Amino acid sequence: MPAEKTKSKKETMAGRSFLIRSPKEEESNAAVREAVLLGAKNAAIAGTVVAVPTLVGCRVLPWAKANLNYTAQALIISAACIAGFFITADKTILRNARQNTIGKLDKST
Image 1 (cartoon, rainbow, N blue to C red):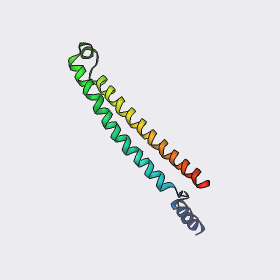
Image 2: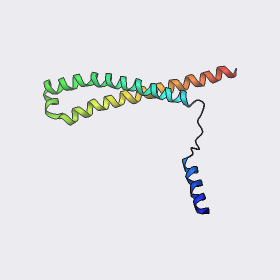
Image 3: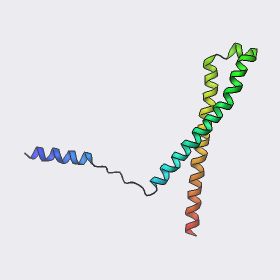
């Protein structure tokens, strides 16, 4: 009988969440969501801007036609998309952090 009580106690302890949510967690999630959205938009723009000259160059330029296969073209375009996403997301997160720091400094004075 005591083993059953211990087991049920363990089950109830395992079911509990001991994480304490920060009051600023909602703002943090919103900032991350904004960074991802802006990063995705910029990645789409960067991919389009890089894809057009890459694909045209591979059809027109003899060197590119001879040396850039489909995999190389895809790598060039995806590298631009990835760079656009991470640069924009990083800048957005840093901007939000700077605004939060400036807001804290203004409140303290």
